[in-house]
Image 1 (cartoon, rainbow, N blue to C red):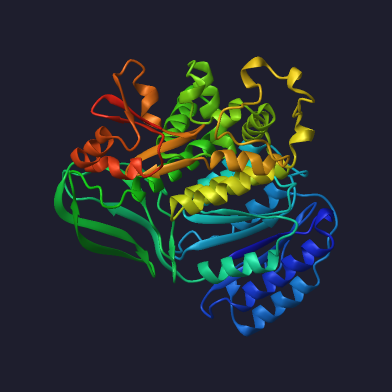
Image 2 (tube, rainbow, N blue to C red):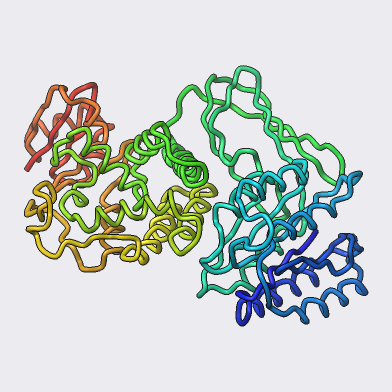
Length: 495
């Protein structure tokens, strides 16, 4: 394990003191048979030992004194520091080789281009090194750190100015210091084809950790699933009996969990490599189908429906059509996700992607993702957000709504954006959006010419429908005004 610490001038003060405490904890927590090195870097880099040394008491004490004496001064030579760390990996070693990289800034010395640094890391790691990156503060190059961790099958984390770096790094190290399965792979039974698995590739597994992989499959049947990997420089295989059903509805949270991770992956592709129509369209489809609305996806959903001319009464997010300021906020948040490499909005976008890619539950990831995206809204005025000063300044299509059930602006922009995004429910495999007083099935937009059957709430026809079609009961429980699709027909329950 190699610890690489940024000691450039911008680290002076509380940041460096927290980092030093965290590094001292990590060194003290090393296993006796580990090997390690400590590298500091600023305008240039410097290694404590010059090679990997055993983590015995003598070497740990020496490292502790070295870390305590670290001082902040100079530029930020990220490329040189990473190359020095990666060069320490023994060519003939079968041990996991981990680099813990902490920085608070942008590369300013030596090669500074993202592609150049990432390419050099890729070539030097040979697919056998994990580089875990910690971005400290909001001036870090998130695109660079996330690309490094992506290419080395590791993870990045970002510590905001008001967060405790020592606690974050220490907790992280306590998790990864005991690897139990490196380079894990899954082999499915014959006849089962796997697609869109997340995370992919599977990350290394550490003691006390659980890894939940979510994907889509084709085929059906029983068989044995094989989990492979490396442990103590030996290949290990574990087999488990499994059954892939043709169809199952008992756990309808699983598709939303998969969609959450898929959207996180797609938005990261947009953030790290650029936007394409195909990526945008898939984000819109998944977000609308599964009700995964955040400030980033809200902009794409609303723009798509506006471009297609969807009537206001059927739009998924009518609140954004009637509050121009909130809509502009989502637009600025999404544009920041595509554009910003560093700064508060860039860090919020990176943390949002991390939450979604590793979600264990769709709703908790959605709530956390909304909060990270809302954090980015704090910078919107400096990003060119234009706030209308009067209704006359608004285009006619976004005049304030007087429709019953509308949500009036509260004056808190971030709170409004989050509140509007929460006007959805995922019920019995369907997503419904609140539009005025009605809950509208997201599938209706795909059936513009479908037959419409209107049924008064509480009427004999209403209870006849309940008795005849049990699957509609959870949908009707949303309230007295519900629109949904069934058997190609649109049912409109009305008061």
